[in-house]
Structure formats: structure tokens, C-alpha cells
Image 1 (cartoon, rainbow, N blue to C red):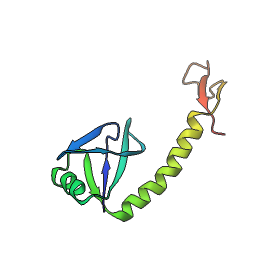
Image 2 (tube, rainbow, N blue to C red; image 1 turned 45 degrees about the vertical axis):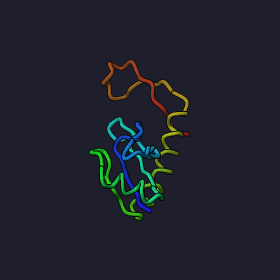
Image 3 (cartoon, one colour; image 1 turned 120 degrees about the vertical axis):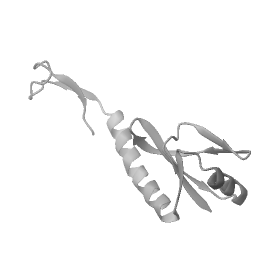
Image 4 (cartoon, one colour; image 1 turned 30 degrees about the horizontal axis):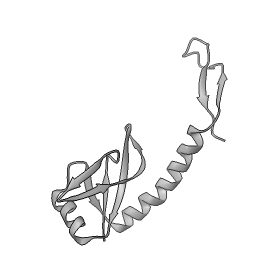
Length: 106
């Protein structure tokens, strides 16, 4: 079994006749990064040999750690993105004192 990480999990990678779809784990710089566990020896070898620029091979330990952290990150992201918006006046005055809209986590 081999493990990989990509900086662009929004696309499917086709290498050596295999299609690889990474599991999104979080956004970095506006792009979804992702990880992939490949069980098939032929497929993992094809991906490791080609290793497109956005993909790196990682250890099982890094994979497990990233997956654990991703669950926490995505749970927080979901909580924030689904939170109600609250309008209130800005205290710093950076918006001219007109206030702004902010997401408040539950």
C-alpha cells in the first residue's frame, strides 16, 4: 500500500491507464489539497513513477496524521460556512464605521 498527497484535489489524474481521484482534506491558498491511499501495486507504481508536479508520495504515518487533522479542519469549515451571518458595527473603523458581515461559529 502506498500513500500520496496532492496540492490540487479538484482534478482527476490519469497515469499509466489508471485514474486517480484524491480525497479533499482542506484548502491551501484557494486550492483543495488531498490525499490518496492506493492498494493496487500496479496503480501505485504507475503513479509513483510518473509523479506529476502537484503530487508527492508520503508515508503511512503522514497519511494517518493528515486524515485525522482533515476531519477536524473540515468539521470546523462546515460549522463556519453554515453559520448564520451577523451584522454589527466595526469597532476598528476600517470600513468607515459602516459595519460588516461576519460568520460566527456555533
